[in-house]
Image: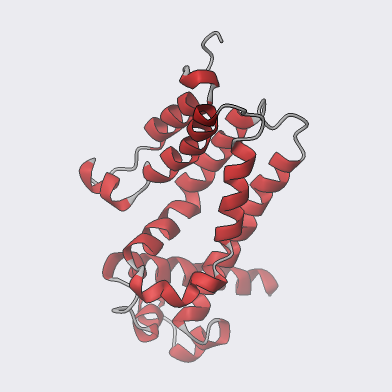
Length: 192
C-alpha cells in the first residue's frame, strides 16, 4: 500500500511539474492537476493541500538527490581528483529530474519568490561550488572549476534549449564542464 501512495505522489509531482513548466505556476490550478491525473480534488488533497506543498515536495526530493551526490563528494580523499566524476554525477542528475525543476524555477521566478527562504537547494549549490573548486590555488583555476558547474546548468537552461530547437544538450554541457574543470582548461584526458 505504501508503494502505491508513493507512486501516486510521484505522478502528482510529475503532472504538476509538467503543467507548471508548460503553462506557468500561476496559471495552473489544483483542479487542472487533478483532471490531468483523472482523480478527484479530494484524492489530490490527500497527498498535497496546495500547489505550494507540491513545489516544496519537489524541492525537498531534489535536495535529497543532490545530498547523495554531495555525500559521495565529501567522502572522496582528494576532491580535486574526483572532480570529473562529480561533474558526471551532477550532469546525470541535471539530465534527469533536476532539469525540468530548474526550468520550472527559471520560468516562474516571480511566483516562487516566497520559496527563496525555504529553497533547500541554495545551501547545497554553495557547497557544490566549494567542493568543485577544492584544491585549486590560482583564482583562474578556481573560477574555471566553478564555471564547470555553471556549464552543466546552462546546458539545460530554457533559453539555451530554445536556441537549440528545444533539445537539451547534456553531452555538450558535460564536455564543456569537464574541459573547464580540468587543469588549465585542457580537455579531459589530455596531458597536463
